[in-house]
Image 1 (cartoon, rainbow, N blue to C red):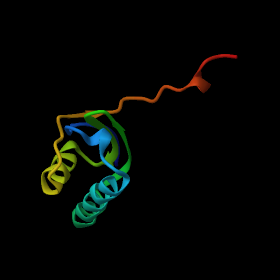
Image 2: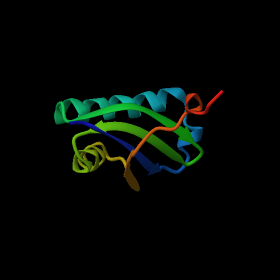
Image 3: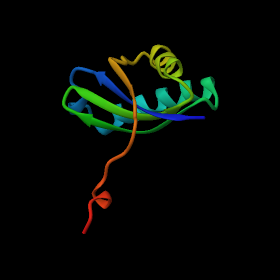
Image 4: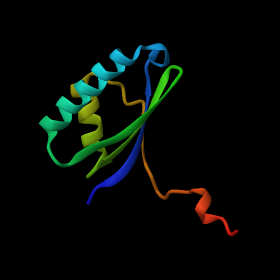
Length: 92
């Protein structure tokens, strides 16, 4: 079973990188994901100032950390998502 994780990465200057540089990061990530197989999947990432917050599905945290190590990315915090909260949960 795949569980959802949020990964915080401290990457100085990432928020000021041009689109092309972010595309290169995505390509490197995808290459490593292909090598790792079906136990880990990248959903999306948010880039904010000197950090990225990445959302992944993985069978366990060790695959997240292995992906980061192979790709050369930091994984400063890896947290399993316990539940999702959104506006539709509030009564009208």
